[in-house]
Image (cartoon, rainbow, N blue to C red):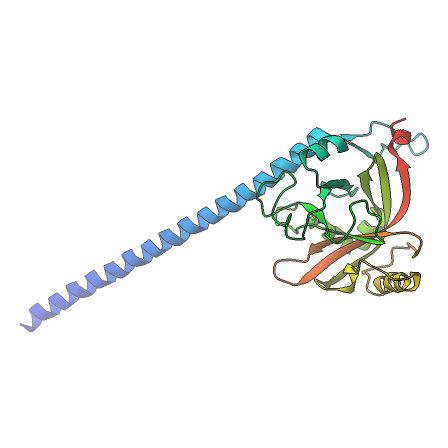
Length: 270
């Protein structure tokens, strides 16, 4: 009797263990399946935005085919089809290009800072969204400080390569960025690179007088990663390029450029 009960208990124990193993395998399969689904979803999302922006660069952007007669260097300038971009999206306000990086994108101005957070230039839903001006700014970049936001993407697109400007050698070698609009190129010198909070003073838009703007420029210099050698000039506006430091950090990398010169594209084409 004891032996029979023991064998029955052993059999029941084995069946129980088998059931646990099957249950664990089922959980594993579900988790693996969900993970695979998430990876496929993320990759599809990434590919959607990459395909769109690569297509835009191909369709509406041309490299100026010219060589500097003095330095013998190829022209760093682009020729942008603003009319075509405006037809694709009336919110288009200009094209941002940062030499030395892969940052070459159209910029938009929406009705709020949420509108283009996860909407691409052509209106598709994608996490990458678009590069967009703060909705409180004017679309003609006439504000003393124009702020442009872009996502920090894991696939090295959008504003991710702003990270490169943490390095002094890179930042002082690639020391300008271009904004194309109205058939002109506006060249901004890298005034400073800073790490700040999402609500930091760098996002100040209106300055009641010259003194307050001068104080803003001065404070930026006190928090910069390194000295860029570019002096403050209260007669010139700045553009602030902003991206997240990483997921859920609450910190922002910011590259601030101060207007250096404006060149008519007709002069460059000639």
